[in-house]
Length: 70
Image 1: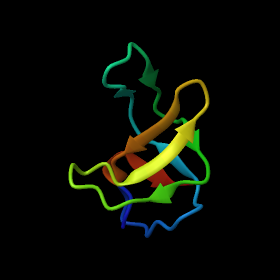
Image 2: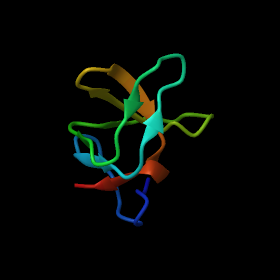
Image 3: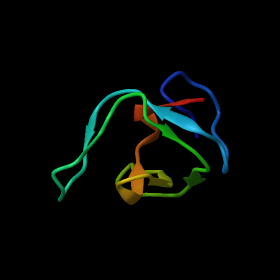
């Protein structure tokens, strides 16, 4: 699995969100530049292949194309 810049990601890595992302079903937004620690890689059919927890939002799944390795 690779991030937006082509770096290889692994379980437990820290990543940074590269653009503002709307949270489906909620009025909140994940701002670009948000650091996410201790990610977990998953096999997702819909493309959301990173499971993580974000402060203030909670458990969420992200697509690897919207993050870069920290």
